[in-house]
Image 1 (cartoon, rainbow, N blue to C red):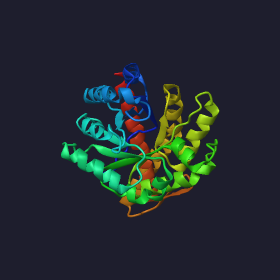
Image 2 (image 1 turned 45 degrees about the vertical axis):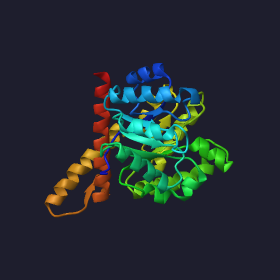
Image 3 (image 1 turned 90 degrees about the horizontal axis):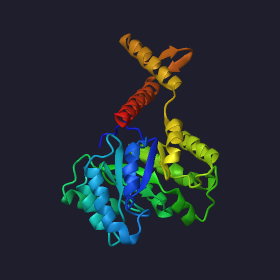
Image 4 (image 1 turned 45 degrees about the horizontal axis):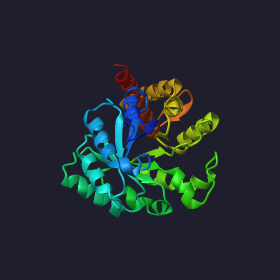
Length: 295
């Protein structure tokens, strides 16, 4: 698939069995939603939740926001039917839990395509086990239908027997491996959740760290954190102004056959212009989402 610039600053998990929450999500300023049939849905409600989530997705209730449906694993009694139902739901992508190999991705792809998945529907992978970290390159290159990774840092910390500290130093290797693989294969990548809803300072620190590491945004478990995540992962006005300036200056230099230009004392090459164009496109998409939400 051709990589697209799409806002993913804030992607909120929504329990698939909670109809009130799914309705409330229509008014929330999250860039994306994960309609969850796995961890957030009790076994006795999974079948009904599947129906509800797919109906909401098919109705395009969330406008231009990205909608992912997190299914149960194919190894469970619900997984196969989850994938089949999600394939026909009109969602943007199917998020697979606890992926540990390319084979699992290809099994889901085959099931999707056997049931008429549109070409633009992506597969996303939860990266949340030590084996996933060791196999991340083969997972990232499994199929062009792959859209991105979502870090499952809570499960990862459990399996690693490591502390889930504020600086997340015990997980830096895992985060870095997934980041490298995602960027090497042109995938999006979302940071894991921050579990302490009373720790606003820690959440802000986690967002800052995630941005510095290169994540596209943060997965969230409560609407109260949306605004902070959106702010943290949005290009600033100064960044956008500078980006537009160097794009224009470099374009003028190219007319004269030059590949580099000095702007305000700083050397600007094509690599800087590429990132500047990405930031400008991102800011434009963010504005479109905001307009869609307010309409």
